[in-house]
Image 1 (cartoon, rainbow, N blue to C red):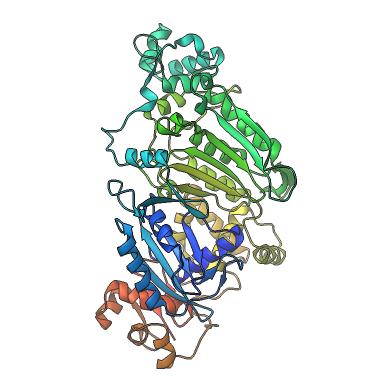
Image 2: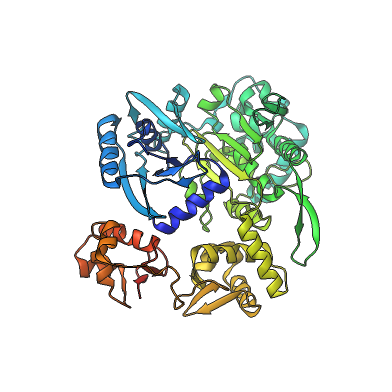
Length: 576
């Protein structure tokens, strides 16, 4: 994915709000040249399931201040050399150069190796990303990578394995009765089976000898942890250093069948997080849980149902839930299978269960209060995104390392203090209170520029096109949006034909300082002209990558504006 100026600026803003590097983004000052541990970071990103980025010229210690680097071209060559000579096999690197506040910033995007090529090693050691750093992989981590390289037919179905010496006598009676009743109500053919033991065998809870399968024990056992201790979960509040109370408080082991664990963890989170006041759509102020229950329920159910039941069970890894000053963290042993973390956020329904038979069992599990454990339709991630947006919480982060899958729910407001103040001013002027989705849209348009109706519908896909159109019409009628040439803008912001506040001098010397091909591309657009990416390639005889590389600093410095979406053929670049 291309790191254009807008994406880089947005990422730096998110890092400042988050207050730390992330699993997929590492910032380094590189003031003294190539960072000393760059090889470990390149290696770690090469072993990840999805691309990671190293941003050089931004200081984490200074609150992600842009500090700049001296010679981006030389830095690029040096990092490529480290990768080729020291990381085996070497990953593919892509470089993106930008200028922010007249300082050079270099983004190095690392394409992960294919599963059969992993693990990459730096100086004979394999590394992987974890939180904001790189760590040396252990034998269990390496085994997880080996499993991910297997085809579907080669992989072991751990949930289908027989747990010898067990029978239905160790199952939870209430959970079992609820499961059997649910199966018979939902599946016509199975409803005709009067023999419970036969139904349990067909449902993959037991084998034909009455032994439990691992998935059946985990889902319905009265105390599955007595057979496999790792089938439980741990929850704790993680304390900041210096509190004088140790590292954790309210540490608790969660045990029992899967539906019971789900409810107990939800209750624990509610007891150990805050209650906040929020406005409803009709303007009433109500007290609600800090983290929306529907979103938390979905994440916890996914963590419990899709956790690895193989190598991580052997070494005792459990589902972990931690609450810190900054966030709620849910960690599930084992990575995603069959899809990427970015695909999870797609409006398209996605289903790729790690444990296929356990997943089928879980579709008919009910909690003690009669609620379903999982939806079974693959649309839960959209519910998480929608619920957190409506709660004005920051967007959750979904992180797959291939060894663990982690969901982070940052605490606090979705918006910065400046954005909150801007929204309050807008609402006073518009004389009505905005609902969270409207606030989110206006802030996005303010920070990223205008967007077409089609783009907005894509951004808020679960809302539906008709509801989205109605929202846009209402915002326009109430003076919150401007509409011009098919593009919506937040009121008071620049429009496509407005004055260019960032107009700068464009003499040859300044343009050349932005990059070798920048003057050629700028000239190809023409005074008061515009051009598509294809037209710029034809006019300059440059490759697509060279044109993009030249456009990025022009966009960042305000010499050129982009009308349309990134990567779209119809998008045009213009200057006055």
